[in-house]
Length: 99
Image (cartoon, rainbow, N blue to C red):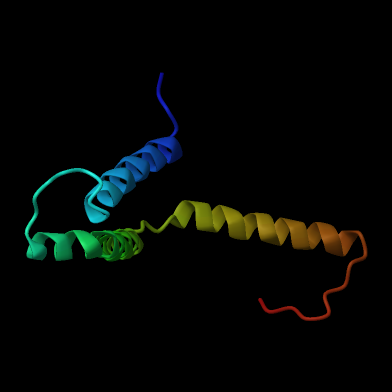
């Protein structure tokens, strides 16, 4: 059974936070030096910043490589003109026409 992506993300976050909190609050008897404890203490913040940077990069890439849909654009313009003509036949008057 495949779980929705949201549940997969929530399960991953829950596992990470439980392991992180066990290490951060020293609930498990693991001997870590102070530099490692310092890294663990700010790890969620680093991961959040990394995720934000990744998300911005993906959005930027998708915007930069977005394909123009010339055929769909022409079809939409034709439908808008047909709708305007239909409304004019029904008596609608445009108060402010831009095109």
